[in-house]
Image 1 (spheres, rainbow, N blue to C red):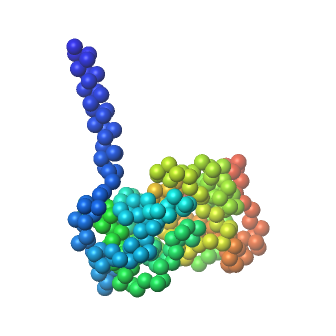
Image 2: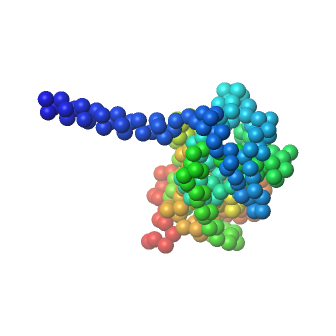
Image 3: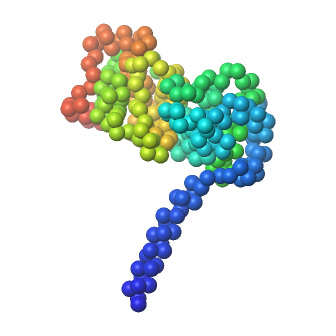
Length: 292
Protein backbone atom coordinates (compact mmCIF):
# COMPACT_ATOMS: atom_id res chain seq x y z
CA UNK A 1 0.00 0.00 0.00
CA UNK A 2 2.79 2.43 0.96
CA UNK A 3 4.61 1.57 -2.24
CA UNK A 4 1.48 2.33 -4.25
CA UNK A 5 0.99 5.67 -2.48
CA UNK A 6 4.64 6.60 -3.02
CA UNK A 7 4.39 5.87 -6.74
CA UNK A 8 1.15 7.84 -6.96
CA UNK A 9 2.73 10.82 -5.17
CA UNK A 10 5.75 10.76 -7.46
CA UNK A 11 3.50 10.61 -10.50
CA UNK A 12 1.46 13.59 -9.29
CA UNK A 13 4.60 15.58 -8.61
CA UNK A 14 6.01 14.84 -12.07
CA UNK A 15 2.70 15.70 -13.70
CA UNK A 16 2.59 19.02 -11.86
CA UNK A 17 6.11 19.90 -12.99
CA UNK A 18 5.35 18.98 -16.59
CA UNK A 19 2.23 21.13 -16.50
CA UNK A 20 4.11 24.28 -15.47
CA UNK A 21 5.67 25.08 -18.88
CA UNK A 22 2.36 24.41 -20.58
CA UNK A 23 0.54 26.80 -18.31
CA UNK A 24 3.21 29.49 -18.63
CA UNK A 25 3.05 29.37 -22.43
CA UNK A 26 -0.76 29.16 -22.69
CA UNK A 27 -2.15 31.00 -25.69
CA UNK A 28 -3.82 34.33 -24.90
CA UNK A 29 -7.31 34.81 -26.28
CA UNK A 30 -8.88 37.86 -27.89
CA UNK A 31 -10.70 38.55 -24.61
CA UNK A 32 -7.42 38.34 -22.65
CA UNK A 33 -5.81 40.86 -24.97
CA UNK A 34 -8.77 43.24 -24.83
CA UNK A 35 -8.04 43.73 -21.13
CA UNK A 36 -4.54 45.02 -21.90
CA UNK A 37 -5.29 47.80 -24.36
CA UNK A 38 -4.45 50.52 -21.86
CA UNK A 39 -0.74 49.73 -22.07
CA UNK A 40 1.61 52.53 -23.16
CA UNK A 41 5.09 52.95 -24.56
CA UNK A 42 7.52 55.76 -23.82
CA UNK A 43 10.18 56.78 -26.32
CA UNK A 44 11.81 60.10 -25.48
CA UNK A 45 9.00 62.66 -25.39
CA UNK A 46 6.61 60.35 -27.23
CA UNK A 47 3.91 58.32 -25.50
CA UNK A 48 2.47 55.47 -27.52
CA UNK A 49 -1.02 54.08 -26.94
CA UNK A 50 -1.92 50.52 -27.83
CA UNK A 51 -5.51 51.38 -28.76
CA UNK A 52 -4.30 53.88 -31.34
CA UNK A 53 -2.31 51.21 -33.20
CA UNK A 54 -5.17 48.80 -33.89
CA UNK A 55 -5.76 50.02 -37.45
CA UNK A 56 -2.10 50.10 -38.45
CA UNK A 57 -1.45 46.68 -36.96
CA UNK A 58 -4.32 45.23 -38.96
CA UNK A 59 -3.18 47.01 -42.11
CA UNK A 60 0.55 46.27 -41.98
CA UNK A 61 1.31 43.52 -39.47
CA UNK A 62 -1.54 41.05 -38.97
CA UNK A 63 -0.83 39.10 -42.16
CA UNK A 64 2.44 37.84 -40.70
CA UNK A 65 2.16 38.20 -36.93
CA UNK A 66 -1.51 37.20 -36.64
CA UNK A 67 -4.58 38.56 -34.86
CA UNK A 68 -3.24 37.31 -31.52
CA UNK A 69 0.36 38.35 -32.11
CA UNK A 70 1.45 34.72 -32.01
CA UNK A 71 3.27 34.74 -35.36
CA UNK A 72 0.54 32.71 -37.05
CA UNK A 73 -0.78 35.17 -39.60
CA UNK A 74 -2.11 33.86 -42.90
CA UNK A 75 1.23 34.56 -44.61
CA UNK A 76 3.36 32.86 -41.94
CA UNK A 77 3.24 29.40 -43.50
CA UNK A 78 5.16 30.74 -46.51
CA UNK A 79 7.79 32.69 -44.57
CA UNK A 80 11.29 31.70 -43.49
CA UNK A 81 12.32 32.87 -40.98
CA UNK A 82 8.95 32.76 -39.25
CA UNK A 83 7.37 35.95 -37.87
CA UNK A 84 8.00 36.72 -34.19
CA UNK A 85 5.56 35.40 -31.60
CA UNK A 86 4.94 38.53 -29.53
CA UNK A 87 3.10 36.59 -26.82
CA UNK A 88 6.39 35.05 -25.67
CA UNK A 89 7.95 38.45 -25.00
CA UNK A 90 11.34 37.23 -26.32
CA UNK A 91 13.27 39.51 -28.67
CA UNK A 92 16.60 39.21 -30.44
CA UNK A 93 17.44 42.89 -30.73
CA UNK A 94 17.81 44.55 -27.36
CA UNK A 95 20.09 46.98 -25.57
CA UNK A 96 19.35 45.08 -22.35
CA UNK A 97 21.03 42.02 -20.77
CA UNK A 98 20.18 38.52 -21.91
CA UNK A 99 16.75 37.18 -20.87
CA UNK A 100 15.43 40.64 -19.97
CA UNK A 101 12.72 42.60 -21.76
CA UNK A 102 13.83 45.15 -24.35
CA UNK A 103 13.26 48.84 -23.83
CA UNK A 104 10.47 50.62 -25.67
CA UNK A 105 13.17 52.37 -27.71
CA UNK A 106 14.59 48.97 -28.74
CA UNK A 107 11.22 47.95 -30.18
CA UNK A 108 10.74 51.39 -31.77
CA UNK A 109 14.12 51.08 -33.51
CA UNK A 110 13.37 47.53 -34.68
CA UNK A 111 10.16 48.67 -36.39
CA UNK A 112 11.97 51.54 -38.07
CA UNK A 113 15.05 49.51 -39.07
CA UNK A 114 13.43 46.34 -40.37
CA UNK A 115 15.38 43.10 -40.65
CA UNK A 116 17.54 42.09 -43.58
CA UNK A 117 17.16 38.46 -44.72
CA UNK A 118 13.53 38.41 -43.56
CA UNK A 119 10.14 39.70 -44.69
CA UNK A 120 10.19 42.46 -42.05
CA UNK A 121 10.69 45.68 -44.05
CA UNK A 122 11.81 49.15 -42.98
CA UNK A 123 8.57 50.82 -41.89
CA UNK A 124 9.55 54.34 -42.97
CA UNK A 125 5.97 55.01 -44.09
CA UNK A 126 4.95 55.33 -40.43
CA UNK A 127 5.27 58.51 -38.39
CA UNK A 128 7.20 58.38 -35.12
CA UNK A 129 3.92 58.56 -33.23
CA UNK A 130 2.51 55.62 -35.18
CA UNK A 131 5.63 53.61 -34.45
CA UNK A 132 5.36 54.46 -30.74
CA UNK A 133 1.72 53.32 -30.78
CA UNK A 134 2.73 50.05 -32.45
CA UNK A 135 5.35 49.48 -29.73
CA UNK A 136 2.57 49.69 -27.14
CA UNK A 137 0.47 47.31 -29.25
CA UNK A 138 3.31 44.80 -29.45
CA UNK A 139 3.73 45.00 -25.67
CA UNK A 140 0.04 44.31 -25.02
CA UNK A 141 0.41 40.82 -26.51
CA UNK A 142 2.72 39.49 -23.79
CA UNK A 143 1.92 39.12 -20.07
CA UNK A 144 5.62 39.65 -19.35
CA UNK A 145 5.12 43.44 -19.46
CA UNK A 146 2.46 43.18 -16.77
CA UNK A 147 4.90 41.47 -14.40
CA UNK A 148 8.37 42.65 -15.43
CA UNK A 149 10.17 45.86 -16.23
CA UNK A 150 12.48 46.30 -19.17
CA UNK A 151 16.13 45.61 -18.41
CA UNK A 152 18.60 48.45 -17.98
CA UNK A 153 20.56 49.09 -21.19
CA UNK A 154 24.12 47.82 -21.07
CA UNK A 155 26.92 50.35 -20.98
CA UNK A 156 29.00 50.57 -24.15
CA UNK A 157 32.43 52.13 -23.60
CA UNK A 158 33.88 54.58 -26.14
CA UNK A 159 35.13 52.90 -29.29
CA UNK A 160 38.94 52.76 -29.39
CA UNK A 161 41.02 53.47 -32.45
CA UNK A 162 41.39 50.46 -34.71
CA UNK A 163 44.97 49.19 -35.08
CA UNK A 164 46.59 46.12 -36.66
CA UNK A 165 47.34 44.83 -33.14
CA UNK A 166 43.66 45.04 -32.22
CA UNK A 167 42.62 43.14 -35.34
CA UNK A 168 45.08 40.35 -34.53
CA UNK A 169 43.79 40.32 -30.95
CA UNK A 170 40.24 40.06 -32.31
CA UNK A 171 41.20 36.97 -34.25
CA UNK A 172 42.41 35.43 -30.97
CA UNK A 173 39.06 36.22 -29.33
CA UNK A 174 37.22 34.73 -32.34
CA UNK A 175 39.23 31.53 -31.83
CA UNK A 176 38.99 31.44 -28.04
CA UNK A 177 35.21 31.77 -27.76
CA UNK A 178 34.84 29.52 -30.82
CA UNK A 179 32.79 31.84 -33.00
CA UNK A 180 34.07 29.81 -35.96
CA UNK A 181 32.05 26.75 -34.94
CA UNK A 182 28.89 28.45 -36.23
CA UNK A 183 30.12 31.34 -38.37
CA UNK A 184 33.03 29.50 -40.04
CA UNK A 185 36.70 30.45 -40.01
CA UNK A 186 36.08 33.07 -42.73
CA UNK A 187 32.69 34.27 -41.44
CA UNK A 188 30.74 32.46 -44.16
CA UNK A 189 28.25 30.71 -41.80
CA UNK A 190 29.67 27.31 -42.69
CA UNK A 191 31.20 26.20 -39.39
CA UNK A 192 30.83 22.58 -38.23
CA UNK A 193 27.82 23.45 -36.04
CA UNK A 194 26.04 25.65 -38.60
CA UNK A 195 23.81 22.90 -40.01
CA UNK A 196 22.63 21.83 -36.55
CA UNK A 197 21.42 25.18 -35.24
CA UNK A 198 17.83 25.64 -34.06
CA UNK A 199 15.98 28.43 -32.28
CA UNK A 200 14.29 28.05 -28.89
CA UNK A 201 11.19 26.62 -30.59
CA UNK A 202 13.22 23.90 -32.29
CA UNK A 203 13.10 25.46 -35.78
CA UNK A 204 16.24 25.48 -37.98
CA UNK A 205 18.07 28.80 -37.91
CA UNK A 206 21.03 30.08 -39.90
CA UNK A 207 24.21 31.57 -38.48
CA UNK A 208 24.97 35.06 -39.76
CA UNK A 209 27.10 35.15 -42.91
CA UNK A 210 29.38 38.17 -42.55
CA UNK A 211 30.51 38.01 -46.18
CA UNK A 212 27.20 38.21 -48.06
CA UNK A 213 26.69 41.97 -47.77
CA UNK A 214 23.47 42.09 -45.74
CA UNK A 215 23.14 44.17 -42.59
CA UNK A 216 23.32 42.46 -39.21
CA UNK A 217 19.71 42.29 -38.03
CA UNK A 218 20.20 44.43 -34.95
CA UNK A 219 22.13 47.25 -36.66
CA UNK A 220 25.33 47.61 -38.61
CA UNK A 221 27.38 50.16 -36.69
CA UNK A 222 30.35 49.07 -34.61
CA UNK A 223 28.35 49.86 -31.47
CA UNK A 224 25.47 47.68 -32.72
CA UNK A 225 27.80 44.73 -33.30
CA UNK A 226 29.46 45.23 -29.90
CA UNK A 227 26.01 45.23 -28.30
CA UNK A 228 25.11 41.89 -29.90
CA UNK A 229 28.11 40.21 -28.24
CA UNK A 230 27.16 41.51 -24.83
CA UNK A 231 23.38 41.01 -24.92
CA UNK A 232 23.11 37.91 -27.10
CA UNK A 233 20.14 37.29 -29.38
CA UNK A 234 17.44 35.82 -27.14
CA UNK A 235 15.54 32.91 -28.67
CA UNK A 236 18.53 31.90 -30.81
CA UNK A 237 21.77 29.94 -30.26
CA UNK A 238 23.71 33.25 -30.11
CA UNK A 239 24.51 33.73 -26.41
CA UNK A 240 25.69 36.75 -24.49
CA UNK A 241 29.47 36.86 -24.05
CA UNK A 242 29.30 39.47 -21.29
CA UNK A 243 30.80 36.99 -18.81
CA UNK A 244 33.41 35.66 -21.24
CA UNK A 245 35.06 38.63 -22.90
CA UNK A 246 36.17 42.01 -21.61
CA UNK A 247 35.00 45.28 -23.21
CA UNK A 248 38.37 45.80 -24.93
CA UNK A 249 38.24 42.26 -26.28
CA UNK A 250 34.73 42.87 -27.61
CA UNK A 251 35.97 45.90 -29.55
CA UNK A 252 38.87 43.80 -30.91
CA UNK A 253 36.33 41.22 -32.09
CA UNK A 254 34.25 43.93 -33.80
CA UNK A 255 37.32 45.05 -35.72
CA UNK A 256 38.21 41.49 -36.73
CA UNK A 257 34.69 40.76 -37.96
CA UNK A 258 34.89 43.84 -40.17
CA UNK A 259 37.67 42.08 -42.11
CA UNK A 260 35.11 39.47 -43.24
CA UNK A 261 32.54 41.93 -44.56
CA UNK A 262 32.18 42.71 -48.25
CA UNK A 263 32.19 46.48 -47.71
CA UNK A 264 35.53 48.24 -48.03
CA UNK A 265 36.98 49.19 -44.63
CA UNK A 266 40.25 50.17 -43.01
CA UNK A 267 40.05 46.89 -41.08
CA UNK A 268 40.14 44.93 -44.35
CA UNK A 269 43.07 47.01 -45.56
CA UNK A 270 44.99 46.41 -42.32
CA UNK A 271 44.29 42.67 -42.42
CA UNK A 272 45.56 42.51 -46.00
CA UNK A 273 48.74 44.37 -45.08
CA UNK A 274 49.27 41.97 -42.19
CA UNK A 275 48.70 38.94 -44.37
CA UNK A 276 46.24 37.84 -41.70
CA UNK A 277 45.15 34.22 -42.08
CA UNK A 278 41.92 32.63 -40.79
CA UNK A 279 41.94 30.93 -37.42
CA UNK A 280 43.11 27.32 -37.34
CA UNK A 281 40.52 25.20 -35.48
CA UNK A 282 43.26 22.66 -34.66
CA UNK A 283 45.63 25.19 -33.11
CA UNK A 284 45.89 25.63 -29.30
CA UNK A 285 43.21 28.00 -27.99
CA UNK A 286 44.71 31.46 -27.34
CA UNK A 287 44.79 32.59 -23.72
CA UNK A 288 42.40 35.28 -22.55
CA UNK A 289 43.71 38.83 -22.38
CA UNK A 290 45.82 39.34 -19.26
CA UNK A 291 46.53 35.61 -18.79
CA UNK A 292 49.86 33.89 -19.23
